[in-house]
Length: 270
Image (cartoon, rainbow, N blue to C red):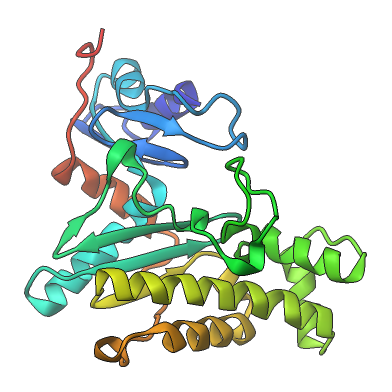
């Protein structure tokens, strides 16, 4: 993976005009050490990768790195701070093949021990009780609210295998009760967790992105209703919103990492 990333960097900057490289990567990434401290098996052997040092040595650039969802949330936080003309607090969720997140308090993105802050998908959810999670535990939000989680719930309800979330969404639009239940249960579980986190962190803004919310209003409406029902009185006006940026958010966020996070220099870790 690192060799492929280094080759891509060389391709986009053949004249080596750049001096810095920002990388947004899947898994638990500690920007201070530059290590992928934990990851699922979706990328075999990814956990334990020296992301910062490995890319710095391969490319000759100084490298800043972070988790992909935190990087994607970076432009949202910058926009919030600019709008408020102050340091804002943000709760960001990305719901797709998994459930990731980012939390910023008073203008500062939280990274936490080993870079684990923001992994919202591994908070417990009553609807997921007893179901195995990709992290090795059971009962986590990701099992019920992610795209694969919704499809798996549909299969449990009907006994009919489905290979895509979009198939469930089409059947829900046609009024099939099991499809509606699978989507709304996952959405409500996500909303409940996000509402509880909002009470804990007091965000000025809550943003929910990723592929799953784009399947239609059935998911979004159920998530919002569950979210609002959890809120304490001072937050009653808070409603989750869609991201301001599209697919470019992660790229823009990765570039911005070089201005805010530690840099890993070629040869420094040998």
